[in-house]
Length: 110
Image (cartoon, rainbow, N blue to C red):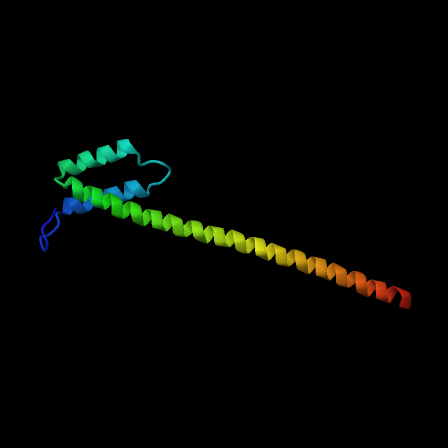
C-alpha cells in the first residue's frame, strides 16, 4: 500500500476505476471469473491484494447502499400510489352516494 503522503501511482487509479466500472455494470456481469481476471491484472500493475480487496469492499458497499436507497424509494412510491387510488375510490363512492341522496330527495319534489 502507498505510504502516507506518497503519491498514488496513476495505474492504481486506473485499476480502481476499472474495478468500479466492473462492479457497477450490473446484470450479473461481475462474477468470480471477472474478479479473478481483475485481481490478476492488479497483480501485474503491482497493486497490493489487500488494497484491491479494500477497494472492492468500499465500492461494493457504496453500490449496495445506493441500491437499497432506490429500493426504499420505490416501495414508498408504490405505497403512495395505493393510498392515492384509495382516496380516488372513496371520493367516487362519496360522490355517488351524494348524487343518490340528492336525487332521491329531489325526485318527490318534481
